[in-house]
Image 1: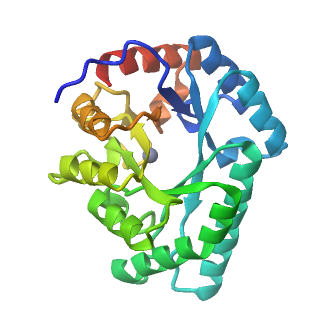
Image 2: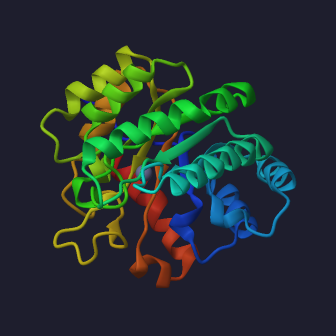
Length: 277
Ligand code: ZN
């Protein structure tokens, strides 16, 4: 199945971290003026602000608040650290509700002092522990599998199959997955696992960017769509085929792009979105 590139911006969302040099007020104004319709808010962008008022400000700009990034980081060999993680996830749920978004993306975490299986068990326990609060406030949780290069400290969930397995094991309408092309493009089972998300009705979010080749940094060298080796449009077509009608979220951490003039970078994002997603 092939799908034509997006010609309008009605499903374009940008993560605040993508234009990190801008504060959230500037980002909101600039995105809205450029015709962008969605924003995903990173928690650092809310520091020192009244979260409810910030949510109102974003809606007044005409933006949909697609998700809050991020919760997670559940595993730790130290029981006290696991408890702190639960507290922080409960806080994230409150923040999401105050902001007025119905989704939190989970970077699930890992502790290199224990094996990945134990970390995965603690992730599942952690999600199940905060699930009542999530359901009570109407906030969904999306498990985002991360590229295996982050399996040491950032996530013990590294394939979409693992994320699907966990979402199915938890089996709650409040728990699903986030698909990010940067983390998953290499996986030979990707098309099939995206289909499985759709069949289980738990594809909650879709993140796009590109993998630059060569990449110069494991975290902060993401590229614009079309700039690297990820078949972004093909993956978009697999996501579309599930019936997904949510936003396509541009999530780029890049020291190079953060140094650029941000209005020019925003123009590049929109051009790349139209041409390569
Ligand atoms: Zn992502």
